[in-house]
Length: 62
Image (cartoon, rainbow, N blue to C red; front, side, top):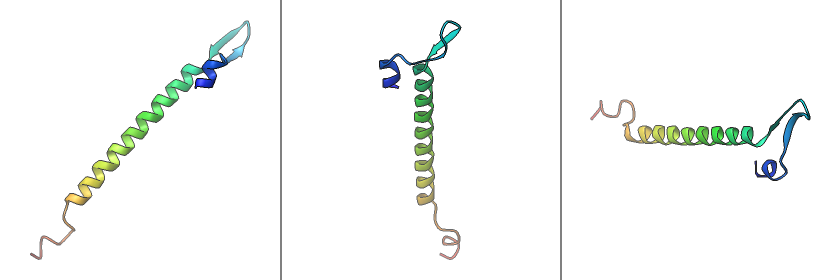
């Protein structure tokens, strides 16, 4: 991303259509970050839920 901004990287045909590459890379980075955060939060919630529940059948045999 930083390199694409630094070298002013573009895609497309010069004179017809060109677009900078960095906005697409930024959107990909934001999506990757959101996915990672969601995964970590869901894994943490599942881990807490698994540690909070008693083992199946353990409470029945008191």
